[in-house]
Amino acid sequence: MSKQKLKYLILLNLLWSILGFFADYQWLSSIPVYLIPFTAICSLYPPLLSIWYILKYYHKIPPNWLTLWILVGTTTYGLLAQIYFPLLMSWKGVNFHDIGSMFWVAVYGCQAVILWPYLKKPKPIQISFVIAFLLAANYSHYFLQTFVFLTLTGYPLWLGMLTAILTIVVQITALIFYTVLASRPISELKPS
Figure 1 (cartoon, rainbow, N blue to C red):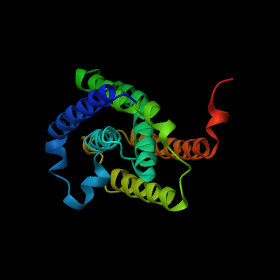
Figure 2 (figure 1 turned 45 degrees about the vertical axis):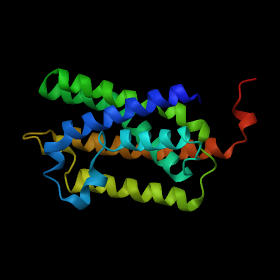
Figure 3 (figure 1 turned 180 degrees about the horizontal axis):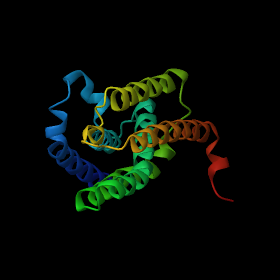
């Protein structure tokens, strides 16, 4: 990847990080500090992407666990946002904030395409780390109700349940997909 592309991606994700922090500040400030790493979505993945690209820029190899973590998270939320926000708007009405959120998450979700060729076969401890993080995040979101939209008055139970189920299914699918993909020799992945 060229230095120019890396500079652009670093700048883009740093900008997303700053905007995500300001967009989520009021919500995140109402959550206990120890839950924030497991609660944040839009204010977590852009900084992680920035760190990944900065490491690449300085010719460092990003840790494989970081690559896997980012891939599973960005893929999960990148896909789910395109389902979740239309369902949310069917309940509360169409608004530009939710449309912007769909675009926002799609931008960092699409960056999985850039990262996945750099993923090496994950070790069991790396997979375990990602699973542990996802379990803690899902527990925080759905059982402790730290997912911002679950705190809305009158939030439909069906939408919360559907979101929880889809999140888990997509996370498992993404984890298996990337683990299997990284286990195959690169020659098998190239088109013939």
